[in-house]
Image 1 (cartoon, rainbow over the protein chains, first blue to last red):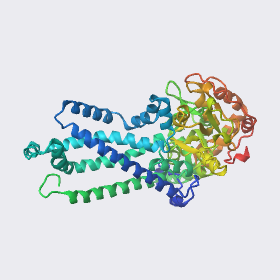
Image 2: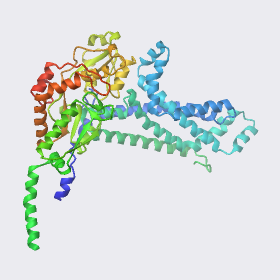
Image 3: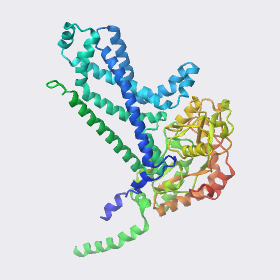
Image 4: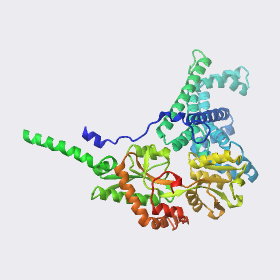
Length: 252
Length: 299
């Protein structure tokens, strides 16, 4: 007993779970409200970036399956560029480097834009995620039997019509589960936005621990909020999967 | 045999409490392991940072090494191993609380919120919030910042002060938040913000190490009272704190000005920069009559 006490070092930490109800020094409310405001930015950033990523990712993914060689090369370049550079570096380049490369007046306009950090984070994360979405979409389309495209063309559908009415609706059903993972990753990746001054959930947790010195409480709360958010997303997508399922098809 | 066992038990009973009376907490741990662990920062120039050989050096580390010497003498150890452990602003309190580091040697502000978790030895620096701007921006006072965009580092007392000033004086400034001091400074360098509000000593080192130090100026007027920096040590450990307090007090009085000169007024590693930071009367007083108070008014 004596021996164990001597070797083990007791944790000297003053737990205070009531800290979330204490006023934060930024003067905008309690520490709890500080974190919730951060969660709001995380959600808004993730949703906007996801819309951008889906739009670009679908276009690029389709381009990779088109019969045109140039469309293929262009799409492959996009994917390799945005998925092989760390997101941290991409955001840094968008925020600090790109405005310097533009003509001076444009650069200044971008720098003085209100919410510049938010817009940059949406563009940066949206582009980076689009590369991954494109690969999922391509995989979905290529997983369909070749007969599907042939049947569509035999019915007299043009190429755009075949994609719109036959290939994409089926491909999206196949790749819905991996796309969900991409969205969950995107939610967590928004925390990289703190490096360019986006005050999202992780940034707020860091501020909170600096102000209050309650490190573990701040990061525990942030962890639980991320977990909660992701559980909500997963449940919503499950419901969506059931709604759009075609009886007897793969991926349902 | 039986007698021997009894005798041993009796000796153990008498000896054990006597020993734990002598030493407790951190000193006891150091005596038993023969190791003391110093926490250091990787880029808090000139307090605690890595030099060109990736070795931690700095003003605060030199002070910590004096405390280590005092601990060694106090415990009458022949050999005391010093382990160095990097810390960040987010990890310094947990690592001290769980006993991974015994002293945090950096540039941590001593305030009452942090004293709920840790203790501080005698203050080793005083710093006030000032603004760094580009000379070309021609910012002379706070009024020149009306409606402008400024930056400070997230989670610092400085950003809190700027928010308060902004509301109190109705300046209508947009206040950006940088991830760390380097990024906040970059925002001024790239004209995303006209001014960076931060501890004056940190601004001096950022300017000194920038590409063009002559392009920047640091405001004359301080925006806050001087805040004390202290070396953190575990809370509720009076014996260890006493050794640290006595060692730092004696050291500041005898060699404080010389040590200050070494790190603030002479070329320092890795690039031979000279911060040219004056020893103000307030700092001089801090060295000649050492205190561990978190209250700016005490200095």
